[in-house]
Each structure stands twice: as C-alpha cells, then as structure tokens.
Length: 499
Image (spheres, helix red, strand yellow):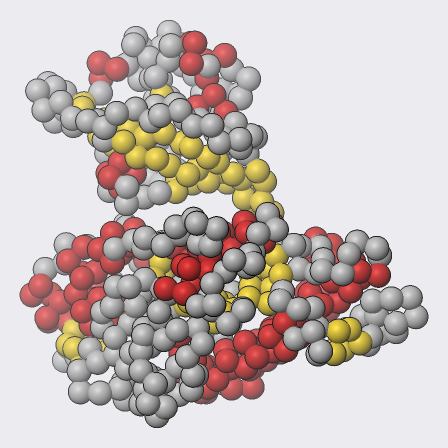
C-alpha cells in the first residue's frame, strides 16, 4: 500500500531484490484475505498462512496489515497490488467514513515471525508462522532468535508406500535421518475388523521393518567408525486404545505410561504389537534381529544385528484432528459434521423420495480430541532434546515413564455427540437444525462396530516431568476445543463440499 495511488500499472510481482521491501522505503504492506480468514488471522484462530510465492526477507517481523476483501475467486486478488490508504476502510476506527462502504477493510495486523518452504511433486509453497496483534496491542518486542533472519528452509515431500520395504530402505539410505516419526497406520477400528491381514501388515510389519532399518543404520555407523550409538531414533505414534477402560482388566483411567494394557479391538492389539516390536528391536540390548541388507562386508543379504538400546520411543495419543483437513472423514473428531454438508444432487433426490432419518451419534464414550498441531509441538520438544544430546538426562526422577513410553493428550473430555453440538455452535448452525438431523445415543457402545472402551483418558503428568527435567517446566497448554474446532472447520461448509 502507498499513501498515493500508483503512477503506473506496473506494480506486480516485485522481485526479492526490490528496494521497496526495505523498511527504509517507507511503504506499508497488507495481506488480503477473504472473510472469515482475515478475522481468523487477527484473532489467533489461524496460526499458519500458506502462500504460493516466497515472502521477501524484508517483510519478516514487520507490521503487516490484514485486509478483508469482498468474496471472490480463490487465489485471485479483488484489488490492485498498489492501493491508496485513503481507499481503505478500517474496522478499528468506527468513525472512518469508508469503513462500511470500502471493498477492502483493514481488520487488524500481524507479523510473520518465521517461514519455511515445502515442496510437493509440482508446487512449492511458503508457510508462515504468524504472531497476532489486535489494534490495541503493543508492537512485538525484538527477538534475538538466531534463525529468524535465516533464508526460508526448503522441505521436500516424497511419497512413500511403507508396505514397499525395498523403497522404504532406499529412502532411508538416501536421507540417513537422525529421527523418524512413524505416524502411518490403519487407524479405523471398524475397517480393521473387516480387513485384518492388510491392516496388520501396515501397523505391525511396516513398523518392524522401520525398526530393523534403524538398527541396521546404527550398526553401519558403528562399523564405519562413527560410534556405536548413532542409529536413528524411531518415534512410534501409538494409541489410547491399548487400554480397555477397565471393562475387563479392572484397571481404570486415567492411564499412566506404565499402566496395564488390554486392548479390546484388533486395531488396539495391532498398535500394542507395534510397541512391542519397537521395544524389542531398538530398546533391548540383548535382542538380535535380521535386516533386509547386510551391514558389514560379507554380511550377506540378511545380516543379523544387535538391538540398539533406548532408540525406540512410543508416544500414545488419543483421538486426533487436523487443522488443515479437506475431507471431514479424515478424523472421527470431525466426521459427524458431514450431516450438515449440502447434499449432492443424487443424494438430494434420494432424500426427496424417502423420509428423513436422523443420524445417530455416540453419546456414551468419553473422548479427548487433541489437535495434531499440539502433539507436533510436544514431539518437537522430544526431537530437540534428541538432537541436542539431552534426551532422558540422568537426573530424570524415578517417576518418569518406563524408559520409552510417553502420553500426549488434551485434558478436555467430551462425547462425540456433544462435540458435534459444540462444532455446530462454532459454525453458527441453528440448534433446531442440529436436533432435526442428529440424535445422541447414550445407551452403550456403538452397535454393529468394533468393540470400544468407554473412557481411556491418558495421564500425561509423567511425560511432562520427563520432558521437563533440568528444571524446565514443559507442562503443555492444549488448545481449547472451541478454538481448535474453529480452526479445523474454518470455511465450513464450502471448504468440505462433497465432490
């Protein structure tokens, strides 16, 4: 933006070297978004902004005005790149004569504190970590973080079929990672019951292969003179469903990492077996296992290596939801909102021919929906400790988890039916419409489905103690359900429209 209209129309696509990005140039800059995303960016609901172009280093930690424009086409700006300040409305100034008539309204401002670039097969995008400031907040204080002014980091995404063991091994050989976070799994209990063989192959056999490869890479480093402890860490993401809620075991929640396990369904049993595999191969120094490739000269195609102590980490989590889903079916925490999506033409015709049936939603089991971003923050603490050589320090008290197991969960418990009602309120769906389309069932476990426990709340206290050793308080603050669902469902229903 400038204090006067531009003198020419050639104001587009300025290169990173353009002198106008400099603070000395005296220009103001704005970020145009449509509603409700402009408001989400300002009030803190939206914490990541994704752009298809690189952001000039000169704009980092600068004040960026957040501008709400009229609705239009995604990716196409509805205003010129250079706009006179006098043409802007300002929501923070209710006396502004243009605040109600301008097609471009300033709703607040923010700063970009960090950016990195991620690359898919065809497209590159820049993701920006945002700090939010309302008009009445003071400007951000200076920050001395060493990496703030670093050039954007490029992260390349590669597709990988974990059931293709040869391709998995090749990828690990190319990248030689320090840490592997293993999140992939068949996580649908009902599907698991219908297809147990293929599901077990992904949840157990792929995990076994990754653990063996970590052991192999560690042995290769040892044989190469790089030290005997240099294999990758494998962080295995497991589930609360390794517990039974006390229905059979008599062991009731909240569950500590060392609590007795007793999964009720095949999904839970597969994840528990994955935990056993990781511990056996990577955490038991007496274990020997066979790898898919030789690790020493003359080792042959199936060499035997000894388990590398303490390099397998199990992180149990509850029901998760993402903040960037395009398909509500990606998470059981969001899928109930499919009841409020506009029907397809075929579905609408079918509904017109038959009486409307309410969707029955479980109101019996207590779940603890947790943002995947919150889990990622905790995993980052673990990874940072690993890379800094400060993982599981010697002064970790006896109350720490049993060496390799950690619990990460939001403390906010709710049934799926009550969660759906909370989501509907967040999306301004009338209560009358909710009652017309859905009904809760608190009579018992869901019928015609895999057995499920009623409550498997995870106790995270020992995890915070373990990760917060050396006097650092790492008690984690989880996003509230209200705020988390606003983020996850932002743009509903258009963002999730059925194809």
